[in-house]
Image (cartoon, rainbow, N blue to C red; front, side, top):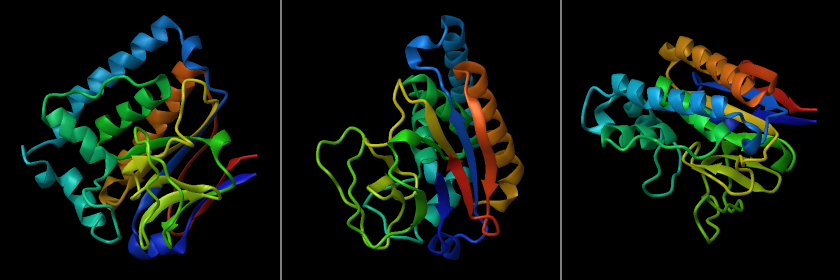
Length: 241
């Protein structure tokens, strides 16, 4: 059995945060997704790129409310220089007229949700995880190789990150994903996560996890093993049996 555990060190920093989780199992490999479904995913990603404009009321990325709350959040823990929330990176591309493109079906689906709702969304391959996945402040030195990098960059002392028994999974909360547990064309079990630090967006978070689960089921034929919102009162859940 594998669990997702949000540690006390996280809730001490963000007592009003909410973490939405979808666990999808039995996903089709990328080459088994029908042409019709692939086109539907592409269409929804394009629509989400367009819909993201509604969250951008300023041409200065940091002055948009959905980004400003994360800039504030990132001041509360140790980060690598220049680290930003993942949704800021996506919205910055939209602001510059450089829409987010296709990577693979599962990643395209979670990027669609991130853009549409302006919330950070990520995904990891459960089968690649070593033991439980934990979100909390680390003592540093956790092994980590980021996607696109050739050299390891271990975590810093005081950094907030996702990690398992083998090292970090995603650094600086939701900034950079690692190679080891990244979703691939052949991943069958996905741990999908949506984070919110703004209690006023509870309804948006629920709508986002509902739509994420719907897309994974509709287009990738996934069985939704779990769909849950974690809070300080409910900090742990089972993600695999």
